[in-house]
Image (cartoon, rainbow, N blue to C red; front, side, top):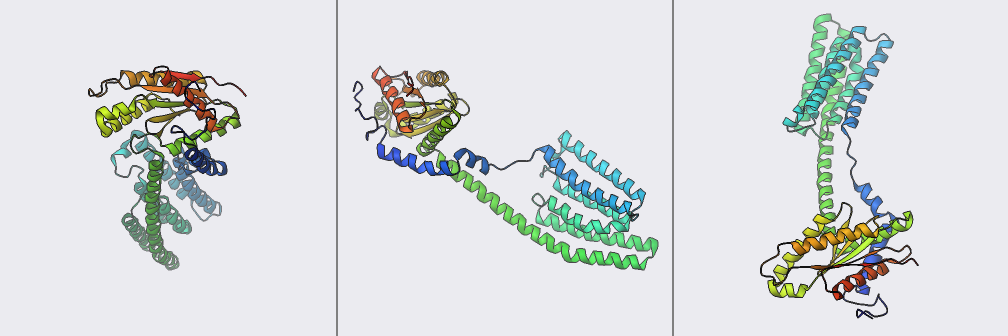
Length: 397
């Protein structure tokens, strides 16, 4: 009653309309309870492989091929010299690309991951092994497909087709050299069967690879559009901070986290003083510019992890996750002082200022009760002369 409030703090007022508030909180609860906003955000985040993981994947594929050659050697189907040459090729291959990536040379190329040179080198090395020992033809066909699949998303369809044609010509050259050196008709027939298999299957594989690339690009573009839509849905288009719906949902989430983990969090309600006078002096466009500038000042002075959003009109909410009252008060005071000293439009007869009410969550209370206490503190700041921060001390139930 001292500040003109009714006894029931959750009555339908302009500051916190009961129907809008209930609708906002009720609509956000199902998504939080069913999947959890924090879990949902984590699941949508694409997992990026580290450089070590990428090297591990490439090394594993090389190791599988090398293991296959060793098995053939143990069965006396491959000569020891072939194993030695393969070991040298692998060592040169890994050392060369390790040097390129460590020195940063790869950054000068359009495709910085160098998938095409890596795949080309791998296929050329396998052709050399095929020339040295025809028994390795059995490994050549499946590992050709594996090598092309490794560079699928980074090599264009045209480049993959050229690579496939080069592989076929390279295999045909190996056939010619074998027959020229040994005049072995049985080997020629066997290698010709392998060539026919490649001629039939490789173009089809390349064609399907192109379809997968197309699907990947379409899904990537769709994913980016969805991400942009989600980000736009979370932002207030006028001032650039989070919008009311996102902020209210985040407030509900922080309550859940606090109840689950027994951690504190705080809420600040911020209101621009005499905003009607600002609109009268600058016009509505000027008033919008003041809101945008204030939003920018506030976001520059909050901590990483704090959630700042526009609740409506000239009223904003600032959520302090896992934060006790004193740090929240310090951040609020920093915002207030930065707004006070900012060089505002000369057309304003007075400087822009804000009134802020801060309070800490009491375990077990509702979000509406928490908001009401912070809102009451903000009105106490206005009644006390504005341009100040008032703290509503939490009292345990």
